[in-house]
Length: 91
Image (cartoon, rainbow, N blue to C red; front, side):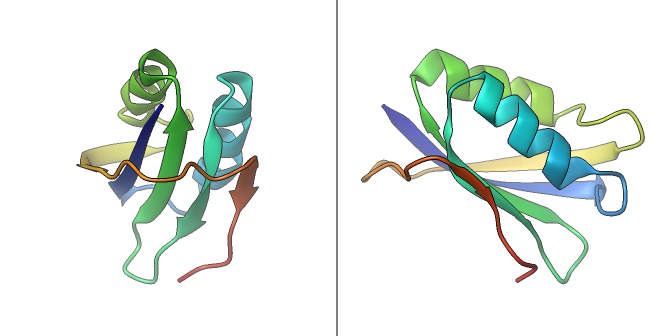
């Protein structure tokens, strides 16, 4: 299992980034969550098989069609993986 926290910056709010992230993460079989941040970024936790987490990170660099991703920063976490995938309120 691999668990990471990700911060995505750019034009990532108001473009369905969270909904897109939830859909892609569920298709890849990942656990975790995604939420908007007050600073305009999106934050997410992805947990699952290392190859699936890596695929999710690749996809986050592009995001949904209307997004303009400027950067994706990743922190390897480890620890207990979350169960399921959720969209959380803005933090």
